[in-house]
Length: 159
Ligand code: FES
Image (cartoon, rainbow, N blue to C red; front, side, top):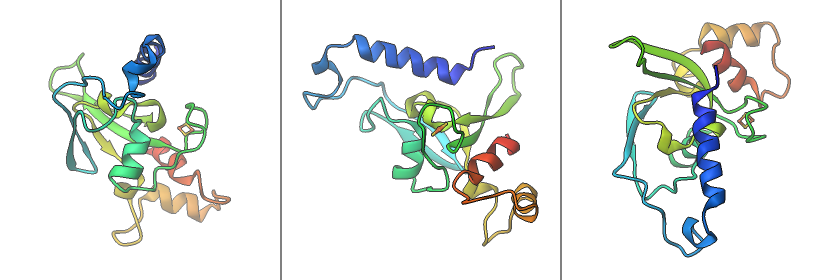
């Protein structure tokens, strides 16, 4: 089954490539992106509107706007997994229930996150509130090297 997030990204990218240069930002004007998209990050609500460029990736929004640097960015191609977050969304196939899975935040545009409940490594566990068993296990079994990709590995296992 194709990944719905990657599908949205590739739709957007191919639409962007068909646009004339003046239509996507070189003139300083932003395309119309609608009234706003609402979602939560670690139980805090956010709404993004026209003030956020439509090409903004979720990973950049998390790091630069929400100031959560635990979610890393490296390849930006969906290959390395350092940007992984966990998302819970309504399941359209089973009314009233949700689905939870890991998402590579470099492959999701923030304007595509409507209704998502996004969880980052900061929410899973930390030195102030205590570590999640996955974090403790990775540490206890010497599962890290430099540690840069550890948040992504933890969030992939968690999702
Ligand atoms: S930055 Fe490598 S998968 Fe997202």
